[in-house]
Amino acid sequence: MKKTLLICLMGLLCLPISTLNAQSKVVESPPGTDLVYQPGIPGQEGESSSARRDGTEAYFTLRTEIYSSSAISSLLHWELRELELDTRYDYSFLQQDTLQSSPGTFFSGTQGKQVSESRIPMGESIGRFHLWDGQHVLLENIWIQAGDSLAVLWDQTTSKLMLSGPDADKIRLQVHLQELDMTAKANLNPAMILSDVKRILDSPEKQEEYNRISEQYRTGWTRKMLWLDSEEERINRASQLLKLSGTEGSLLSELKRYRNEIDTDLYAWLHAYWTGKLRKEAMEFIGIARPQSRDWAELLLRYGMQSEDISVANDWKVAPSEWTESVYLENKLLEKVSPVSFFYLSATLPESLRDQVDALYLIREYRNHTQSDSLFSAVLDRMHTPWVEDYLQNIYDSNIAGREILNYPLLDSDGSEVFPHSWKGKLVFLDFWLSGCGSCLKFAKNNFLPLIQSYAAHPEILFVTISGDSDAERWRKSLESGLYTADSSLDLFSGGISHPLLKQYQIQAFPTQLLLDKEGKILRTGDFPSTLDGWSQLIDSYLASPKSVSTSHPITP
Image 1 (cartoon, rainbow, N blue to C red):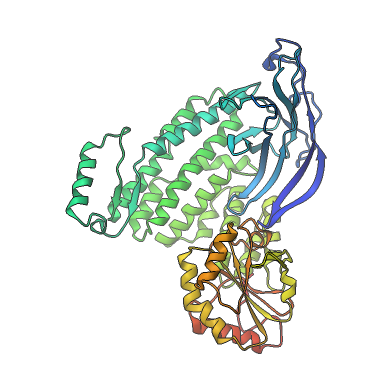
Image 2: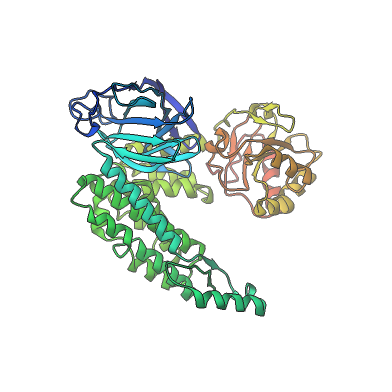
């Protein structure tokens, strides 16, 4: 079985760095042999394995048995992610493959099943594992350790999944915690943030229906919509979410019950992962609530993570990305509602965690800074975590002004490929948009379409629109509407945010703009004007300048 080892750098694409022969085989054990007690299981002590990034060697061993009533069973696919920095932009070290099964045999007790065994090389001590059968997810967001072995028995006829093997218990625990999390969310009443509940309950009939539902409400049995039209109600909701993410929450209490039954390192990792995941959700809610008063700062400080919880990162090369993101979001919120800066807050963190949090800030926020090149340099200068530094350096190098744009093809309305290098010779205004996006419509109406009309006769500028839609038919209907584009613009289809060009420049929010010079090199990626006059002045300055980069305007990589 051939397996491609991929590394996702710069959020641009998965670059193949090596091709390995995955050691896959069909295991034919003596009848009645239980995998738990079978000696010499690959991936455990005594087995040779692939080189890890720290110089040692280890594997994760996965055995599968698939039962299907059809003559041909579908194939299982797996994915392993390590060194995750930002899951939004897919910054991670990725391996993925399809399991190649062989028919089971009478003597191995697997007749009528498809059997496989794969040894998956691991470069780190822990990684995030996914396993699926077509559209059917079997295991998701499961943390495995180097040296683990797991047997998966999958009955496609009944959709039943069974786990066995030396390390099945730690996987079952994680599945159990996921079920608890889903149950807790199902029991949490949905909430809507609005300025005045009367805008919703605007008739006696609606008010009467809501009163009836409220009277019949029973915790854990029925649900009701909560209207959060006051700051006090929003703070109470945030407090509830933060409590669930702490020791008062049922999920972490349940995890604590197993503290002495699983590996110490795995327990610490799972505790950080679930704490981060739950706190991240709480921080996202607080961000939506648009906090302004110091009451929010007091709330965040009251439910802040304890120093002993954070100190575990002192011994880690990498922390769970959910934990990192929760700290990033919390520091951003504290910066907003208190006089303390983001980087002052992150400076108090353990070194490796600080580097990940600072890197996440740069990845998410650099477009909003007028001097982001200086910011990048300052953070890189104090960076002490090599793998994080490599990610940031690649992002910086690929987005800095003067770099040539990636020459990956896009499709025009006829389905023909259009390459960015074909735009050379003109100043290029790139507008990334999405069908149904209200902000895209607003930008097109107030800025983009008037600019196209204003520069229609100018021979040195080209307006290019790139849709982030994944549905080509929807894109074509949007083009026909004339609300996003004009007859004189070059309108292209990307197929979605997974396109290398959108990944390269972290295009996940719409609308987003880029400016290219006549040589196809980046002029600007952010810090653009908000008015039509501002855009006109910016474009005129580049058209009037004989150089690729105008020194009269700050360049934002």
